[in-house]
Length: 87
Image (cartoon, rainbow, N blue to C red; front, side, top):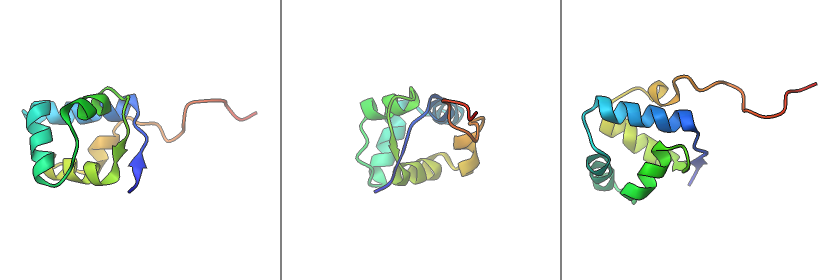
């Protein structure tokens, strides 16, 4: 399984989308579990805070639950990683 490294912006985007859908974390996790994801609410909370990584399959499941384009998950994420600038 492939994991995506979580970022604060990815987490904020997931939280924003979830709230726009009118779902709580508990409701979202319940829907994910029906699709076969083993995510717990505490793990989902960490993902939304940008402190947890997410499996690509869970992101696919979130897309199905939220019925949004994948681009929404990556909104406002810069194309470069933070760190040292090249000299």
